[in-house]
Image (cartoon, rainbow, N blue to C red):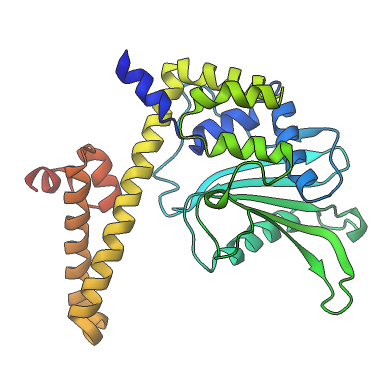
Length: 307
């Protein structure tokens, strides 16, 4: 019993299985999602929305995330999509990792969603704004900005070209309490909480909608099937992080050792094999099962068992 309590205390609120359950469960998540979006709009001094329609299907108890299919999408944690009462589309992504080229990725996803708004033969005046909300669990730059909003402006007179492009970036690592508007401050306090159960009572007092968030959290952690999928995703993320760290280390070492010989096919294949073995050893040492290691390194289970 004690072990279960500790697991809940260290609950990862950025786990995509939980986030999708929180924001995309039709019939119970609309008010929660609307409040979260409006908290961002208020902090950016923009108009809020009256209602949202959820477009992303919610994971159900016992449903599984296809981790293998998304193996190469290492930085994507969640994609929540909804449409507001005035036709604006809002996409929400939570990202664990990224680099200086990450803004291009955000713009690409915005463009992909904007381009889908019109069907063949429809007029451009039927296009509506696409609002991209990105919660980053890393620092995009060295500025102190927690919440940044980007739009299309003319450089000299700052005239807005169109409100159809709106990109919000929230850097969670920079968050400090009580320096944003009350609503967004409350949400980020929850997302960055080290111990949700201990801090939730205080958060609920600040914002009544958090009572609904707390109910959904309690339902989630009580569900064995949902927690099973949650743990699988946590293991995947943990293993993936080990692989990324190991790939970076091996890449540095291989670059120093091989230099210009990297282009040789034979050396490349040998290097890839050695890299897979090294990563598999790290994953095995961390206690992950052979099947998971095999799926993520390409080594056979027999090869892994011999390590």
